[in-house]
Length: 106
Image 1 (cartoon, helix red, strand yellow):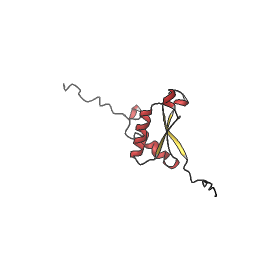
Image 2 (cartoon, one colour; image 1 turned 30 degrees about the vertical axis):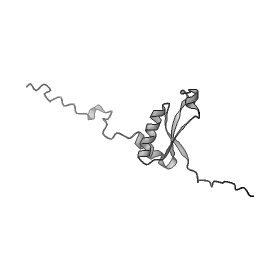
Image 3 (tube, one colour; image 1 turned 180 degrees about the horizontal axis):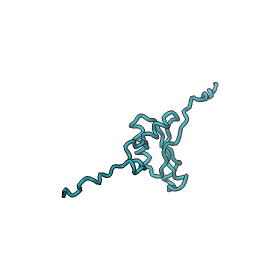
Image 4 (tube, helix red, strand yellow; image 1 turned 180 degrees about the vertical axis):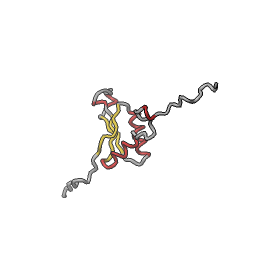
């Protein structure tokens, strides 16, 4: 009877990266679902027995969303998209319309 040794080739396992951290399990599952909806495989990772012993603060209470290394940037873009239409910090570029009659009176 021979035993077969399981071996993994280097690079065969994907590297997981933390893309989101929260202390709220419901929030973690919402974020996970959003990523899955976009086709990004992810894992909700937290300390085993977290809810049984009631630790919800500090690093022991963290709930992490992990994604594959190659999906990391895409996941960040989904979770925190850049706002191309957001107002710039430069108020000189904003037109306030001071010449417009607000009340309708002339």
